[in-house]
Length: 110
Length: 114
Image (cartoon, rainbow over all chains, first blue to last red; front, side, top):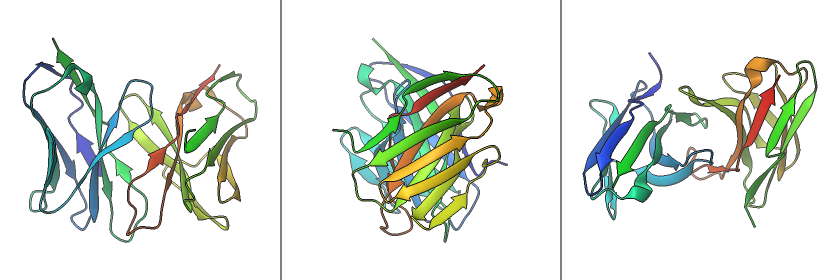
């Protein structure tokens, strides 16, 4: 089993749709969690950190479910500019090596 | 100016050649990382360094070596390139906050080994 797994997609959604991605992790003692966005042929950039209490930034909401060992990213009112690959990232306990998922591709269509 | 830079941005080379990819950062971070990205496999850690005297292997270090010349510079070498090292290579940095916070990536080097 991979340490961090994501549905690769692609997710094809119309503008204005709500879309959600999940990411599962295998180490129950993992400490910190992130969502990164990566545009085609570009570097990943942090979209948001994921806190135990969940967090929201505009149209984006991230949540952590420790019991089921997954994190989620919800995008509301999708824009064309949201089209990208979304990578989840997990930091294991006592480790400083972030483990990245393979990414979920999102295409938002007009 | 970009905080994390990589050179070259693109490189085509032949099997058996020695290649060096360079990374520089102006963020003042102690931690630096080299990843490769392949379609469907995501980012895989090659080497990482927590300071100039600390170098650690990642999950796929075979065929690679690194040098941390200064806090701001971290180079990746392929001593004898082979075609399955064709990939997109990213350098990244992070600071000492907590157990590893946000990572800041360079723009990437696209390497093709023929």
